[in-house]
Structures are given as structure tokens and as C-alpha cells.
Image 1 (tube, rainbow, N blue to C red):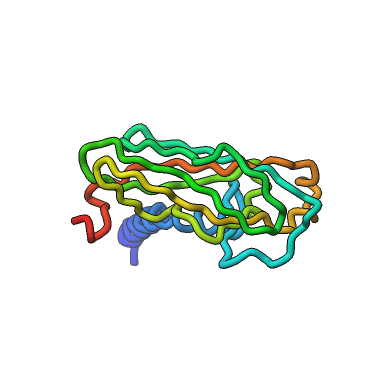
Image 2 (cartoon, rainbow, N blue to C red):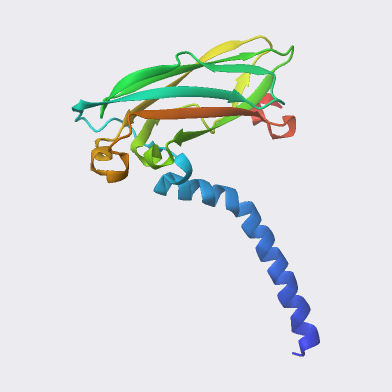
Length: 182
């Protein structure tokens, strides 16, 4: 095979490979963040560990944001709560569709300080799931979570007393709505 033949094949293969990596980047980054806690990504578990540290209490602040392209009002039902490390907790967010038509949205989240993300463990959450609100509909969206007691062993978090859980809702374009909406 001559260089005139293999060079275009290599270049096309490179372009196809780059395109494939660009599509895989988002799910791979999400998996990386969930495994490492990078970027304030929380852990996920089925239930709290069963042991608590009664001596350590944390204030959890709740933040809610909505992309300007989504006609929803989205807010935390409470500004903050105090939790015992290791104990299951439940918080609520409220969403209202202010438009005159059904719409779909999905929420992303982060935790600050970023180092606390891997110790903030959600056992139930509405994030990354398509949420449908009918015109004018309001719903409560629960988040069940706990703070992993292993936080106590992290020297970088010894002085941390407040963690912020922040959600941002984004619209799902109509062509991407789940099958039931089509």
C-alpha cells in the first residue's frame, strides 16, 4: 500500500475516532465524576450506612436555578437544614410550569465545597431524569440523602460546617422528549 492510499484511510479513521470520543465524552465524564466525586458530584447509595456521628452536625443549604429557556419556577422548599452526619435526611424542591403548554426538563446538580461532593450521598433524587410538568402544574421534588461518616477522616474537611446542594433545571428540546410525550 502506498502512502497516497493509507494516509486518507488514517485521516478518516482519526476523524471518526474523534467524533466517537466527542459523543462519549459526556457519559464518560459523568461516570468519572460519580466515581471520584470530582466537581462536587455526589455519591449514590440505596440507604444510609446505619451509623451516625451524633457529635458532628452539618448545615445543608439548598440552591435552585432554572435555565432562562425553561418557563418553570424552581425553588427549594427550605433554605437550609441541619443534619447529623450519617443520618438519613429528606429535602424538597418545588417546580411550577408557568407556561400554557406541557414542558419537559432535566436537572443537573453540584455540591460545594467540591471536596465534600463524594461524602454527600443521595439515596433518591429527581436529577438527570426527564421531568414533565403540564401547563400550570406544580410538583414537589424530594431528595433523600446523608453525609457519609467517612467525612470525619478527611483532613481537608475538618473545619467544614456547611455544604450547599445546588440544582439547575434545563429544558429538554421537544424532539428529545421521552416516547410517552410524542
